[in-house]
Length: 185
Image (cartoon, rainbow, N blue to C red):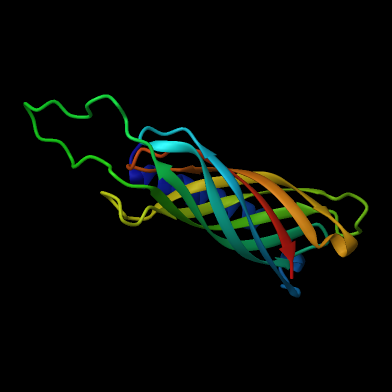
């Protein structure tokens, strides 16, 4: 898939999500701030399968059960050398990967949660931009994200989320799944 086709598809998905909200529902309400951290998993050559993530987010109300969230997260996976030789000596290849992977993800999602407090479960999904600084190609990539969360405690201040990030990337890290435990400020 070409980069143009993926970006066009992402723009169509975003436009469809925005168009699905009623016009009178597009009034922004108060903003809630969230912070969290937790483990993450990835299946990629040259990186350890488990890592850590830290996240900060702001969320506001669009409708009674629809919210919009903007979050930024840093995901880090350790270096785990691949025992296979990546490139034969008879041809030129990109320099080998020799360090940990750090992914910066900035995502915008629609969050569907029960605002009455009766149901603590919620789901979310949207678009993101992903970058792996300090790697061969640190350019940002666009991708999809989605997951499920559980709010708990007094006034639902604690949360636990599991999500899937699916960036289009040329760095070879592909899908990764963070689990985040956090606090609503």
